Image 1 (cartoon, rainbow, N blue to C red):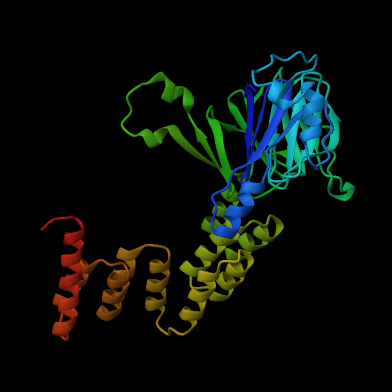
Image 2: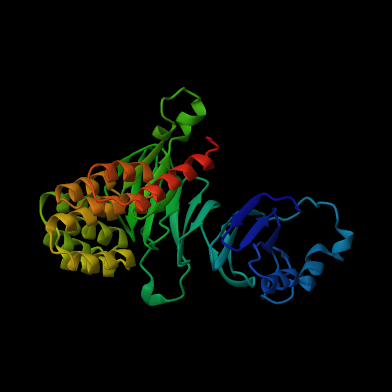
Amino acid sequence: MRPNFVGINSGHVTIASFDEVLIWHYNTPKSVANLHGAKTRKDNRFHIDDTPTGVEMAKDLVIATGGSSADNKGYKPHANVDPICTLAMSEKILLVARDSGVVNEYSVPNVALRNRHKLNSRPYKMVINCNSSRAAVIDDAGIMTLLDLDDNRESQLNFNRVERKDVWAICWAKDNPLLLALMEKTRMYVFRGNDPEEPISCSGYICAFEDLEITSVLLDDIISGDETQNSISHIIQLRVKSLRDTDDLLQHVGLEDAKQFIEDNPHPRLWRLLAEAALKKLELDVAENAFVRCANYPGIQLIKRLRNISSAMLQKAEVAAFYGEFEEAEKLYMDADRRDLAITLRITLCDWFRAVQLYRMGSGVSDQQMETAWREIGNHFASLRSW
């Protein structure tokens, strides 16, 4: 078959010609047990007019192709009046759209036809959200509509009124089924459910949406081939409104107001921001609460350690080290006259060069400690073949 459309998730690949669909499992076997299982898996291939039920597919295929599969080695051009025009795949479902606007919904991995949706136009692109409850569909005219896939009526929103024109790129958030980013001409809108936030001016292609940050790439600038000092300048990070608002509250208002705002708009990324701001002010109770909310175990362990430290300066040094500000942490340790802790920090980072410098700043260093440091420095150069 000729692959015209392709979809992929963490375990399966789907390709489709104009009238047939083929889905197969790819995996990297981790053990011998998995290896035996991999050999028994069959590829599912079926005609778009068939109604697969998730059981053995061989019979369907014979009916679809009009004979045994051995007779059909060559590619048959489609004689289908209503050919496939696009497909989309998530962890749970596969959507296959046809020219007439009919969208077949199949369960994955046991391919069974669950539902048929009817759209009023020919779909051009479809994207499914992270929990497979809804899909965004762009048609040939650039009009985006939302398709509800969830059978649970209580969780459904009224999507009929969400319709945008001139849409050319869409991307669902990986960690929130309600957040959708879309490009409309040169403006980017972020939808939370049915409600758009104010647009951001941007002309990049959306490539990722995670942690309330949208990564956008200026493909037009890359294709133009102009020389640039820094290739990273083609990648833009845009932040969702709730992330920008939380930042403003933490900087200009205070922890309590920010905490209230985050409780109204909960997200792990916002709780992490609150925890960091609280730690910088040594508000341990607020920080611990925030770390628990975003399930950050290393952060909770840090709070336990900080509670056992009486000096505020040493607490600040621990916080700086936790967030990767090692120069600042070392400076705080030295100001607190704890050279031993600064040395321990550098040894943890395997920065033996700096450890030797710190050893030499004062007395009380044993020959054994210096010998260990020089041996590690020797190993460093040996690994670089710098004899």
